[in-house]
Length: 184
Length: 189
Image (tube, rainbow over all chains, first blue to last red):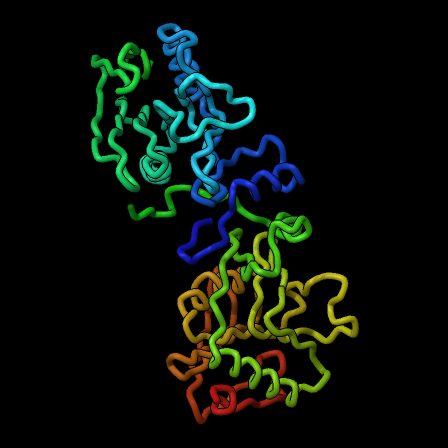
């Protein structure tokens, strides 16, 4: 459904009105990225299992020292509200607002069928919001892609971490994850 | 970063959703947009030459067809579940209520015309494919850039099988309204 012609984009406020008025139905799997309502891919078995496993690994090591958000919104600007698979945010009361870019310590996407979208659209959105670090758990190539140093639309530092290696988020050096455990 | 948009799927806007957005005031008359293939596409600004051509053409058509047809200018036509464009000119089967109950559907359309000054890519691209898919029998592009009229007939799939280029000094007639002969010179101005 994509075209190269300029089209109408939406703000977060309009996006919420659509949900409130039933234009977007409850349970509709969409996220708002740079004013575009983007359909989310159905969650496959391996993808779901991987998210659950990473959530467990992080909780085991960090307990309640960070805010762990699984497949829930973060508010990056007035036209971008994606739902990363896992967001690690600073501890705060998020009952009246979603975590913003400056709250996020790490955004993580698990990619089986969504690799190109995660590398382009998501990278752009997260870099623009100055999220300091972004990981793509790339299930098709069995690596974790680590993106750091957001500048403009992209991250300046990109590396792939393979099985048998470990990684830690820059801002959470105590969290040590083995790629084997992440990928399963 | 250049995003290739084929890499993700925009949530398709249906005509139902589009109409609800208008009802709820999320889209207003300030939004110069039309629904094409599930996307709310921004309309280009209408330049003076384009506007003049629409006016001239509607005068020509009105004179030629009188009240045998219903004529629509830059107003919606509901083509499918995901397309509701606003063609420059739509010639419709005559209806005494002027389609007050519902927007015209593809079967009501005798001829669609777009005036193209800066929008040729769109008119030959997403518009043409939306019109062909809806089986609009005949589609004209008044191509002001090249001073020709492009006549598309025989819709199949997302394109038209027959394309005729009409130059100045030539004449043309809509397939479904063959009795009337129009001059390209008059249309192109």
